[in-house]
Amino acid sequence: MTSEEPRVVGPGWHAKVFAMVRRVPRGRVATYGQIAAQLGSPRVARQVGFALAGAWRVEHDEPVPWHRIINAKGGISTRPDADPDHDQRRLLEREGVEFRPNGTVDLRRYRWSFPDEG
DNA sequence: CCTGTGACCGAAG
DNA sequence: TCTTCGGCCACAG
Image 1 (cartoon, helix red, strand yellow):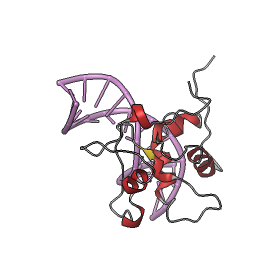
Image 2: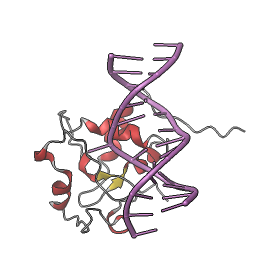
Image 3: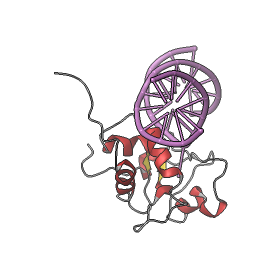
Image 4: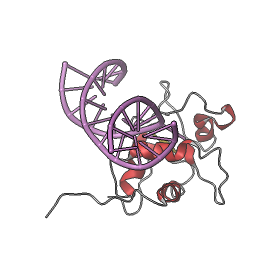
């Protein structure tokens, strides 16, 4: 028996990421690593970030709540060229998610657990 | 084909 | 508890 992990990264990979992100309900958050793990590849968290990088620029048939995805420390990872009109923190606060003084979210409280996770 | 890079993660100090 | 550092892997040039 080998210990190789299944890879879901390939054609349609971005679409799968978006589909998984859509499962996170309003007022809740999930981490990049969580999404990667749900797709079967726990080590492609960075690729998830890549997939979501241009999500707010592209128009999707179904909306992609990309702002509900944060890093494992409960903080927001944003790029320098982020659009102020799509401020992630503000979008989350609008859904009722509270932030600590240091700008992080309490994952114990807001982290969403997928039905088939744990 | 080879190299650099990035919306990450987790162990270690 | 906070900061630092190496590893991770797909993708563009």
